[in-house]
Image 1 (spheres, one colour):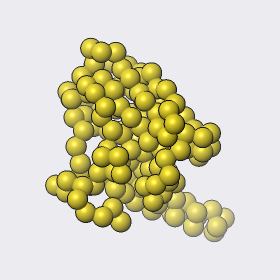
Image 2 (tube, rainbow, N blue to C red; image 1 turned 120 degrees about the vertical axis):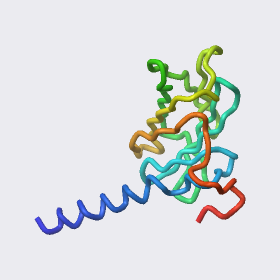
Image 3 (cartoon, rainbow, N blue to C red; image 1 turned 90 degrees about the horizontal axis):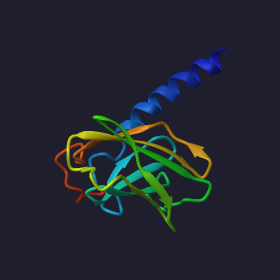
Image 4 (cartoon, rainbow, N blue to C red; image 1 turned 90 degrees about the vertical axis):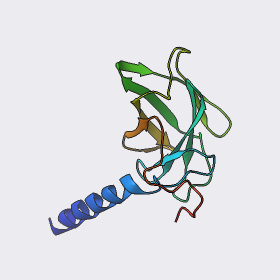
Length: 140
């Protein structure tokens, strides 16, 4: 019972750290970072209705699509799911051309990286960093 309590406290502490890890700096591909679990997701705006999703390791490196998947949903006036296609080192996700990702709303990303399922993460639209840092510093 004691081990379960220690595990519960540790998991709650790690979850709190995960939500804030890296959101104040741009990622290696110039995108916005979230940490849904033991890996990072990087979302890069590719066009008004397209994004690239990179599944990075803990150190923001080694993008992988092996044994991985992403589901990206736009939340706003209803919910619209993107068509996400696996590329060499990322997922290309595309909404219909009438979607404008520069407008207010949110993107919800569900990701699995190399068989590790992460929690859903929410990217508020329009995309911006969590603080005033413009990504010029080190990420750790």
